[in-house]
Amino acid sequence: MSDLLENPRAGRVKAVAALSKKDVRAETGLFLLEGPQAVREAIEYRPELLRELYVTPTAAARYALDDAPVDTWFVTEQVLDAMADTVTPQGVVAVCQQFPTSVKDVFPDTADSLEARGGLPGIVAILEEVRDPGNAGTIIRAADAAGADAVVLTGRSVDPYNPKVVRSTTGSLFHVPVSVGVTLADAVSRARGLGYTILAADVSGDDLPDVRAEGMLDGPTAWVFGNEARGLTAEDLALVDRAVKVPIYGKAESMNLATAASVCLYESAFAHRTA
Image (cartoon, rainbow, N blue to C red; front, side, top):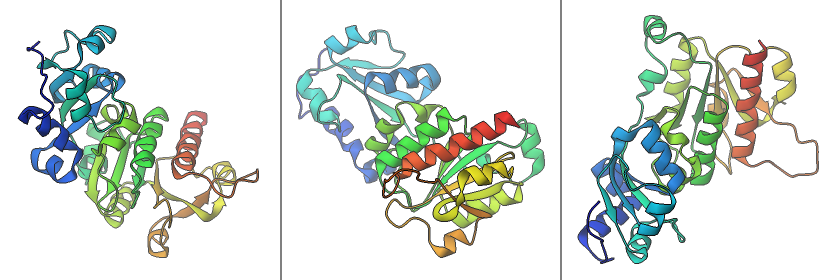
C-alpha cells in the first residue's frame, strides 16, 4: 500500500479519469472498473488483468481490500471523485487490461476446434447496433446468468469497456467471453456454418413460447438482438433463420431490449435443460 494520494489534479489521477474516453481506452488497452463488487469479481476470476487499485482507507477496511493482489494506493474521497465516472463512487476504482475474445474463438473455423474444447457452445448472444451502455451491460449480465457461452458485440454496438457497460455487467464481464468488432453478417455466417440455429428477437416474429414448443431452442442457438429504437433492419432479418418475439400479455406498449433479451436467453437455457 502506497502513501495517501491527495491531489485530484495529479497526473496519475488524470490518467485514470481519462479512461472514461473511448479513444484513450483504445490507445492504452485499459479500462476503468468501479465499485467493490466488480473489483472482487476481477480479483476472484481474472486477477491477472488488474493493473492498479485505488481505494479510500474507509472502503479498504469495509470491503477487505487491504491485501488485494495488485499495486494499491490509498486515496482521498476528492481524488476518487476525480477518477470515477460515477457521480457517487463507492470508494473503489481499479484499472484493468482489456481482454476481448476473438470471434474465431467463439465460432471456430473447423469442427476439430470445437471438439478440442468440448463441443459446440449452447447459447451465444449477438448484439447488433446496441448503443445504450446500460442495455449492453445488462444483456452481458443476463447471458452470464443464463449460462450462455459468449456474447458478440458487432462493430456498430457500444464499446463493452465503456464505464457504464462495465458497471451494468456487475462483474459478469469477467465470467463470459465477449467478442467485439465483427460484422453481423460474419458472425451469423460463422454460427450457421457450425450448425447453430440463428434467431432474431424482433416484434415481427412468432411468439417465443410457440417457437420453444416446436423444439427450435433445444439445440445450439445464436440470438441476435438489435438497436433499441429501430430494432433489426430487413437486411438483418434476412440473415437469420427465424424472427421471434416475446409476447406482451398486459397493456405495456413495448418491452425494454435488455428485458426481452433476458427472457429469450433464459428460454433457451430452460429448453436445453429440459431437453
